[in-house]
Amino acid sequence: MSVAFSENALTVLRERYLRRDEGGQLVEDATGMLRRVATAVAAPARDFGEDRTFWEERFFERLERLEFLPNSPTLMNAGLPDGQLAACFVLPVQDDLDSIFTALSRMARIHQTGGGTGFSFSALRPRQDRVQSTGGISSGPLSFMHLFDHTTAVIRAGGRRRGANMAVLRVDHPDIEEFVNAKHTPGQLENFNLSVGVTDEFFAALDAGTPFPLRNPHRARVARTVDPAALFDGIIDAAWATGDPGLLFLDEINRHHASRLSGACGRGRVEDGQPRSRGAGHRRARRLPARAPAAPQGRDRVPLRLAPGPDALAGRRTGAPRLPRVRRLARWRGRLASQESL
Image (cartoon, rainbow, N blue to C red; front, side, top):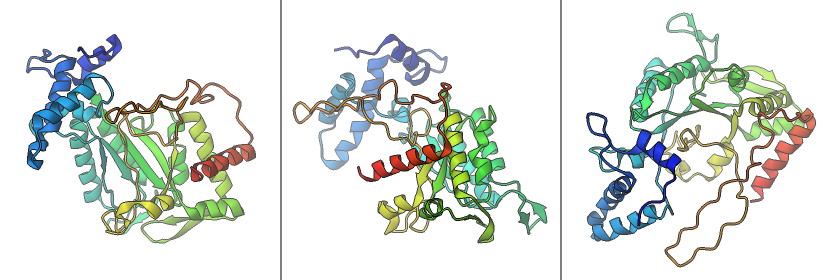
């Protein structure tokens, strides 16, 4: 059987995924791409005493029926020398130039192979903080995010598409308001998704209506306090207007992530989110299917996740009237409560 790709899908495949020779001419079609992927992914079966041909054919059949398609790096790189198949990388960024520019170099290499990258910039000292080693003034995490953003725009991922990043800043960082409002300026951080790393302490202050402390990560002391309701309202306004930032629930992640016992992730704590490949980093909103998926038919059938209904993002950038602040806060809290009950 031939693969039932639409004309639009075939156009995208020809532009980004199908292999070309040194002269830029296509050397495979859609079926050839799927065969290349199936062959490469099935190859390790022999290391486990399995029949490679059996798994290659089984995987190819699933791909050919469009029951499953792997991520973009796999479609692009499978079967190539040193082919990089992963889509998601989290790179550490510490408060020194060596760490920052090492992460920048690694990001460029990852984007070159079609991967996406995520960073927590929470360890960087805030803007206008004194740098004792030079006697100068820190430019703050946003300035370095712009550097990463510009580099991403220059390096096309895999030579076929732009790279994608996710930036996280803790809600108690002194530059959090600048981070929240970064995308109100058109053209800023276009290669980033943004997420505020929220904490239990922040929501406790929000519920109690008490001042929330922002802490200098370099000096480990309170820089100033803010009204948590005003800060949360700013997050809502920015998300409504620009689609960013999202929320990353740091304490909830650390209560459940598997690496907390081994200390494998940042001394046992997670401080940043992992980007998912849907071209860019993944969106943080939970999307529910328009209807329940059909039950699998037979043990080898894989149910497909249905796309959201057309009104999934109704109201965003459509000129829909804003809700009053108190009602918006209540709606956000209601969403959080509903997610906890799932």
